[in-house]
Length: 316
Image (tube, rainbow, N blue to C red; front, side):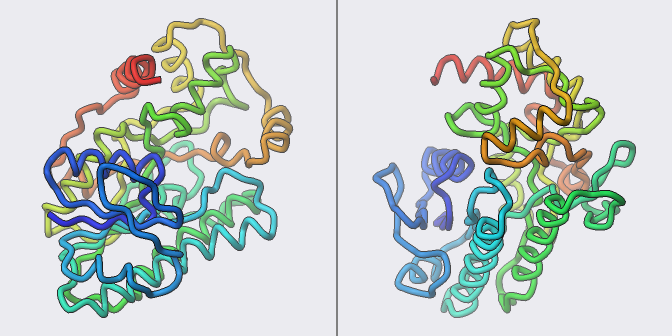
């Protein structure tokens, strides 16, 4: 297959590109600052229809991962860049597909499991899940994230691409061993003895092992009956308290200092980020993916975390 990945230079895009190339596929990554890699890289600005669009004409698959990192403070300038980077890139990818003489068979569009409501007791699947934004006392930053997600998906759905199947990948945190990813960040906290319970510890963490993310992408490409929003997450999200206890055990440390909510807020301020990633309860599970027959290689966090810790030690 010929696979084009706009915004594919980050952790997830790099893992996908490596897997596709290893399987013999022709991969093109679109990026603002193309770097030498095992696959072809083509420059784009993420908002202007230009020469890069010829890569999409004749491609089999487009996987759009473009969007500014949300690991920052949600001030006015950053909010604008987060929203515009997703809306503009998605809109221009849709334009390129709609104008292609030979459009791709499928467009996998990045979205996020953050779109669902904060929930301790209710699981949010991709059939009956509750879209967030109306929870009582929800911080403004949480509502902003949901606005981003809903607008991101709206632009995808509005794109006139009748010959191309569209899938909205509502992904949980993708756990891989590469430096700079979410697993690496959380492991750093654990290694320094700070990986204890955060706030009440009741808030759920939804996750997926990198291998299963890649396998689910292959599954979505191959299964033509799947379209629209699809949750890409393990079937077994865990409360923060249990998630971090398993993390410490997998790494081999018993020390994990807890953090109160005010401490998390202070730490986030000095690290120039937000507490949403830690405090919002994401009890997100797949349904359409598993109902179609998909089986996870790493269905539970203990086995996934042990594997990731071993790989991190070998690769870093």
